Length: 187
Image 1 (cartoon, helix red, strand yellow):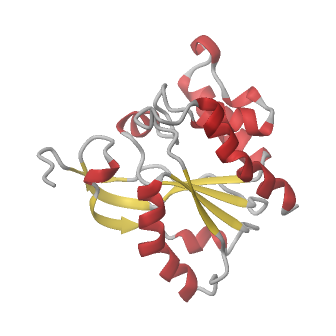
Image 2: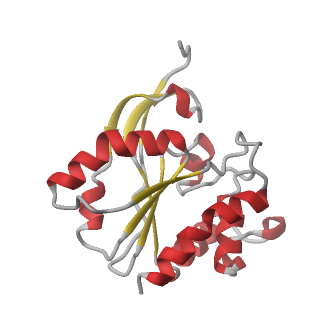
């Protein structure tokens, strides 16, 4: 498969986490809209934040009718994640990619996932989509094992991207309930 417009992209904003984080949700690489917003799942049609609002019964991460500024929305989402003990990051630190196409990702340099796992209470990793799961298994699991984190469970969840039209919002909410369950159970 050939991609004509591959662009080298560096992940330009850091992870969201603290010592109380219990689950780690990993995407592959931020989309152009997320990179523009400088935060995770920033495309207006991405269903990640509506799913999170539903599984935690907390709509403070939503921005109905664009009522708050982009900066305020980023901060609301950061606080939401931390309040619910969810760490957010991406598998990829840099790569060549065409737009937001996970299928086009080449020349991957992974993020140092072990660095935050070692300094938090993360007991479970979830990836948002098959490509993030594939890259995590190939690039991050060996590094985690070398750092002594051999038993860290990981599950691949369906992508919340608008490109995953086969999954309606209700099905995504059902699939993601395990994130909230793990965040609460590991307390």
